Each structure stands twice: as C-alpha cells, then as structure tokens.
Amino acid sequence: MKTDHYTYRVTWSAEDGEHAGLCVEFPSLSWLAATPEAALAGIRKMVRDVVRDMKTSGEPIPAPLAEKRYSGAFRVRIPPHVHRSLALEAAEQGVSLNRLASAKLSS
Image (tube, rainbow, N blue to C red; front, side):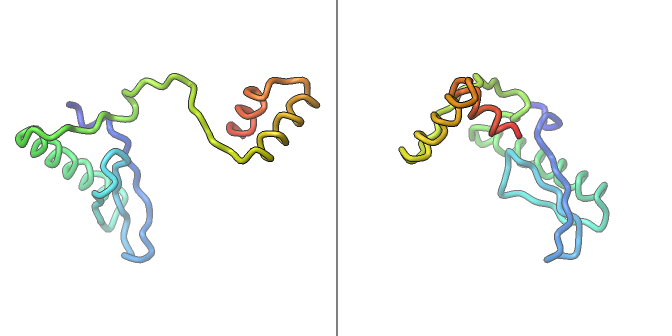
C-alpha cells in the first residue's frame, strides 16, 4: 500500500500554537510541528509506521480516498416538505429534481 496516496492536510492549530499535520483516512492521527513542512513530514511518517504495524497485525488498512471509485449516486433523506419545495422549484425551472439538487450541491 502506497501511503503517499492518502489525503494529507496541514492546518494551523491555535490551541497548540503549532501547525498540525492530518490524514483524512486516519482521523485519529495528527502531528504537531513548528512549520507546515515539518507537520506534513511528521504525519506522513506516522501514517507509514501505522500502516506497517496494521499490515503486521493483519488489520484492515483504509483505502486512500483518491483510489476509491464513486458511482455519482447517493441517497439523502429529507423532510417531505423540503422534498415538495424542491420538486416545485425544479418544475418551475423546467429541470429534473436530480439536476436541481446536483446544482445546489455543487454551488
């Protein structure tokens, strides 16, 4: 498993007064450092070590989000009055409810 395919982020932690390196696929891990570069290097090394330990112990390893396939479809439950309102809006615009929802989600 290539750990460089994971989704890494670096953000400022006001609480800690340092940069925090994060990995989306491993939300419980973080690495604090004085510079963004050091935070990124730290979290990447930590993920490599954790993945190696998971392999050794036979634990399932999260797939990188970048390698997952997405169908483009998902279900969302909404209250009936919201469904009605969106259906009305779609009809008034002359588009499908699906197209209206997609446009709203992407804006």
